[in-house]
Image (cartoon, rainbow, N blue to C red; front, side, top):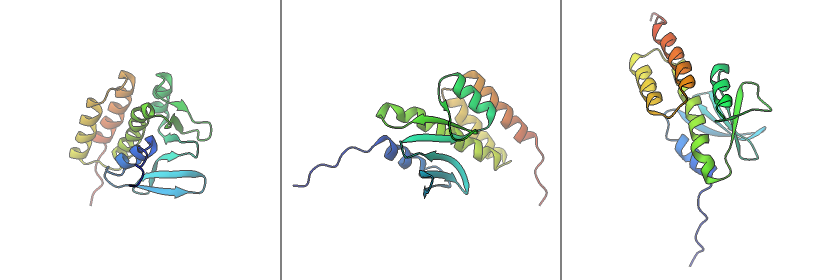
Length: 150
């Protein structure tokens, strides 16, 4: 009888979840263990020490760090970090990666339906009010910007 396989690691759980998101791919990288992208845009980097590093705009980073939801990245000025070693690290890391994903999706569309889905998902997440306000501002600007003519 084969030995039972060990339970999936928090990293494996995060990667499995992220791969279910539209257009997300995972790639090996020479300076990181893996990169996580939506399309060709980086949304996260898994460092060799199983720390998730997530690029986010300054207003989002500031709120996350100020509320203790992430640490500032020592290597990427546009990033925040979260450990991904223990099972209880998974919810926070997943939330950060998803926030990065939603931000990148927000930047890539002016479609009212897609923007509404992003707004709805953010409303359903447990987020500090300051973070809700930052995303609401970004969404409002995106919704107000004119669509490019075809």
